[in-house]
Image 1 (cartoon, rainbow over the protein chains, first blue to last red):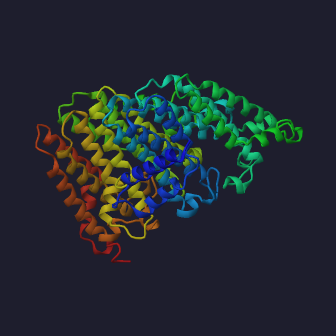
Image 2 (cartoon, rainbow over the protein chains, first blue to last red):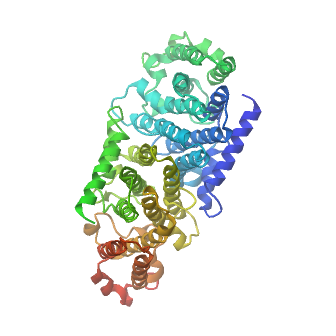
Length: 302
Length: 302
């Protein structure tokens, strides 16, 4: 992904955040929403949405941009709520104070709520000119976020005494990746169905990579506290499979993701994006270092 | 409002909550969402939506029901988050433990988020057959809830050092009442604009009534703790105007609400609903008792 795409995403985020607020909004709420969205992380969900839309012959760029922004607002909302004391109790995110550390818990709670609403507003605003596509895009977004199988459900599985690791990961991370690939296709007027598997595989790879980095990562490198999964007794591939097993699982998921790219003119560019992202998530040298080391096994060693 | 209308609302709430969950959802999340929605309060927002739709010759009852349910889900979401320790820290609501008391803070946070998403899902599901009305209904719902002037903004004004009482009340309560009257009209294919003032006046009357009841109410009668406004230093008509002044203000708002009902065949029934609700909110005898008593003045007496 080039700088042009990132610049386009940042510009759309700025524009839609301003449209969802305005001069009459409570100023600290707007500041907290800005803090939640900027500076961003890798913006992988909007990038994915844009890449798939381009592969599908993107004919409504404003709708695609709005879909991408809505996905990122939802992702940011989930991070703000997930960082709060009743969940991760994280002090930093992307190297800066978390929203509740900077603005207090009440505003952090409201910031998450307001970003969820802003996500829908963004889609509706751009979708009025494409009412049929809009309905599908709203459904995809809601599936990616709500109960029974979106981000909120993923978080809620952490509050159950029994949770299936796969179901948990699909909900907590996979669902919004599926929304990203499918929304990219639908915003361009294409059938979203063939793009679902790509989102599923990539989402699972991301979640496993996060589990791996939670164990091997360094606080400085991630800009957030590590060891959170073990600390919060959350389901984790690294604790379930051991670090070596988790890395083998990650590598097979990256391959499955590459294979899930539908045949199209842009297929090779998309496959390259997947490989590039996987290298960014868990560098090859880390994979080689930990893949076979029995000393790093998680649950087995404990 | 008759029992038939209430029964219709309860049935629609049950049905749409089930559709937003399902057997694969995390069971405790679904239980917490149910606890947040049932048993309900007066269901005044959905009642208002249905009454206006009927006055406008309701031709799409499923869409009207969905709009009514979406409003109530949003209202319940705001109550769940508002009750949490970082806001009101309330132990009871409608005579039962609050969601965070019953299910813990993490699930309470997620329940609010999930209900916001469920509200949009409900509208989108029913609105697919009416895409043009759907766009307007989604805009009205978002305005009633988000920044700059919906419920979330209202709550956020509590986190500012300066807040205008009117702006705070319009956002915290009025905005969702406006969404209720306007959505009722639009769901029936009518112009929502003439119904805006009714929602504004009624919302303000509700907020002032809440302030009054916070001072004179009894915990047993309300089923929730009282004295919260003073305790949390929130903007309040009763502290700003004194109790007598707040009651005079309430009575003038009830009259303004009656006057705001647009001329239509159902006007007299709607005016009766307003008078009936105002009597339920602050009984006439309480108005007469406190209207003139200087000993009950709030800020002045302190």
